[in-house]
Structure formats: C-alpha cells, structure tokens
Image 1: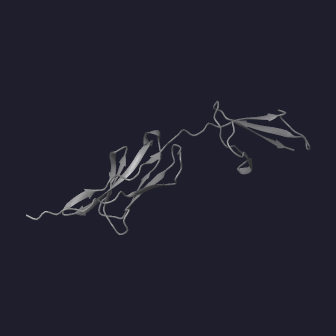
Image 2 (image 1 turned 135 degrees about the horizontal axis):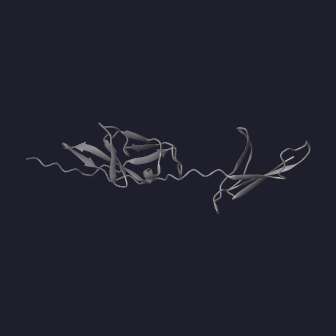
Image 3 (image 1 turned 180 degrees about the vertical axis):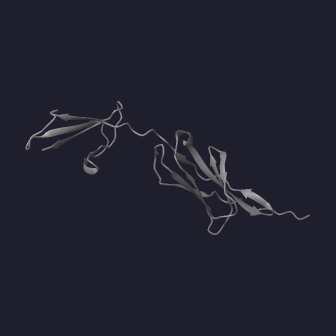
Length: 167
C-alpha cells in the first residue's frame, strides 16, 4: 500500500466584495469573489457566513463569485472563503481566507427642511435661507440640496444641519 504525504495544504484564497462599501442599505446588492492565491491553481470554493457553509462552487475553478441581491439585515456578518484542492483522490481544504464584513444598515430618514423667512411667495431680489437638519437626534451626515433632480450644492463633511442662502 502506497502512502502519499502532502507537503502542504493550499494557501488561503483571497476574498473581496464589489462594490466595496463599509455599509450597505437594504435592497442593494454585493458580489463576493473568492480567488486562488496561487496562479493557475484551481479548486472548489466554499463561501462561509460566520463559519457556516453558505454556498459551494461546482467544479474546479481559479475564481468563484457569488452575488447577494436585495440585501437585508440578516445578511450582516463575516464572510470567508475556503479553497479545496484535489490531491491523492481527496479534496484538501485550505485555511479560511481573511474575513470580510458585510454590514447592512437602515436608510437614513429624510431630513427636516425649513425656509427663513417662511413666506408662501417671494419677490425678485429677496433672499431665503434653506435649512436641512438630520431627522435623527445626534446623527450627522452629508447633505445635498437639489432643485428638481439637479444638484445645487452639498455640504462639506458631516453635519447635523446644513444651511444655504439663495438670493
């Protein structure tokens, strides 16, 4: 009986996500890509969510992608890839890839808007100050002021309120 000794396990695959956002909102999609760390080395891939098997590739590949559509809060988690390489009639697993985290957060609520002075009609030459404020207490963000769908101006940096004067 011949005994084969494998000199080393396959190295961990690489993992990435596209688009690479720190936070996603419900309804968005993300594509997770697992790839062999060794050029031309093919194998089967397992995508894991918090160490539990989410999906396996079929057949042997150098790259495997999985798209998660319509993101929801239950998608929030760490994801890793494991690559299995066929050797000596067995599938040998690599160590897991570094983890990527997919965080899904609520869409921000619409800001509270106001105008000063608060008249129903303005005459040419009058100035008006438009104010946008976060609808969540102590929540900062970037504001965009639009007329129809056209961008007029936006805030620089994160703020809880934003004002703009129109003359």
